[in-house]
Length: 304
Ligand SMILES: [Ca+2]
Image (cartoon, rainbow, N blue to C red; front, side):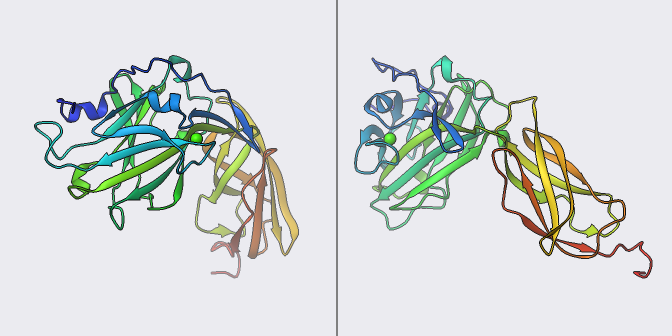
């Protein structure tokens, strides 16, 4: 029977009635990453979801991890469904057990989706994801415009970019039927819903905080993204600034988890104008070195 409640249900997880809850996952190591798979698309996982205006099953046609993935099947129907909203919101919710509510020690929320349809292409907003922070509220949602028919699309959401919403109690996938045509058939395979973190301090990105680097600069300001560090702890970053393959300046600094702005102390005598390469490393790795240009200072003799 179709649900009779309205849009409010979009953001209210339905009680999980599965007889046998899936076993609690254990972290697994994948190279420099540790992963906690919250949903692997098994029979027990599929039974833990609460679907409305759609069906969910464990299916072997497409799987990203293991033998099966969740299959969310939707027959878009503009004539039936909730009385007030026949053009509705097919959706499925999964509520996590209390042991999995604390995501604070993890860096990323990962999942993959494979789409098939009776349509030739997907609409601009084919699907949405919601993450719950309390039993009654989804305070993070994101559309998934990256989805493509006939291929796996991998998603990686940095948890540092989400609003503060610990504890996190579950998640939802949904579509808006208004984005589709009446009668469209949709199949979404979803797999590897997981939390991931680096096992050692790893710089995932670094960018110049300011556009120009002047030859008489005392500091080089950078925005860095650091993963694999516990909250409240610092990790050492080693940096080398090279010109034509020869180090011009180098040093070490301490950075905290997440995005932060750091200052690299440059030589007191200044830098010769020209093209440089900056490399940054932590024990777990760093981003590729990047190029920067040092330009004559407007305050140096001869440049005015
Ligand atoms: Ca799987």
